[in-house]
Image (tube, rainbow, N blue to C red; front, side, top):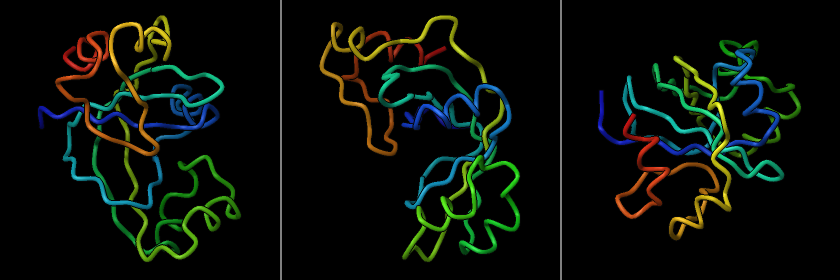
Length: 142
């Protein structure tokens, strides 16, 4: 397990699917240097614009796009067309297997985070930093 906490930005539809349990694998184009047990904070992008839950990273699978689709399509929450469009031109797919998914009782909205300090949600992902707003750091420390 690692002490670093991953802040993962998701479209609202994918955040909802993860929280509902129908999506357990998140697809990315870029490598993620995080190991099993890494805590993940789930940020739902516009129009939600809030941290909506947490999870743990079970593993990161790296595969060629076609192999990734064959192995994980049922857990991605994507159509084949969406999958192909997202990975167009990519040699590898990075698949984050999420577990221990927990929805927050109350979302932590962007405006609230910004009241507590400077905060910019990631385009894709980043790690929670020591200068992030206190509510995010407290959530990451749980």
